Length: 88
Image 1 (spheres, rainbow, N blue to C red):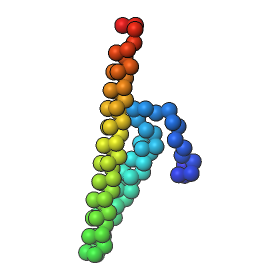
Image 2: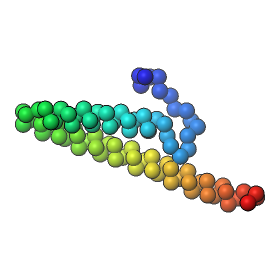
Image 3: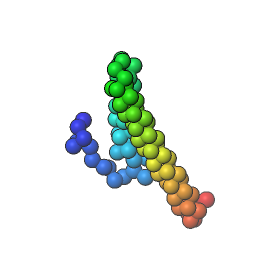
Image 4: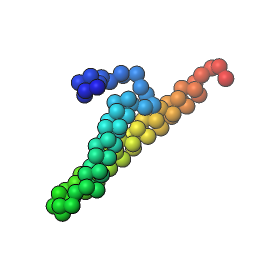
C-alpha cells in the first residue's frame, strides 16, 4: 500500500490508524538502520547512521506518546459521557 492509498478514516478516537501506520513504518526504517549499523565499518558512515537511529528512535517515541495522549483523552471523554448517562 503506497502512502497515496492511505486516507484518514476520521472515525478513530482512542487510536489513530494513520499514526499506527506511521509507527509501523518508522519501526521498519529503524530496523533497517540498525542492520546497516551492524554491517558498516566505515567510521564516518557509522556515525551518520547512528545519528539516524537516534532520530528514528525519537520519532517512534513521539508517535507512541501521541497515541497514549489520544487513548487517555478518549478514556476521559468516555468517563465524562458515562457520568451523564441516565441508565446505570
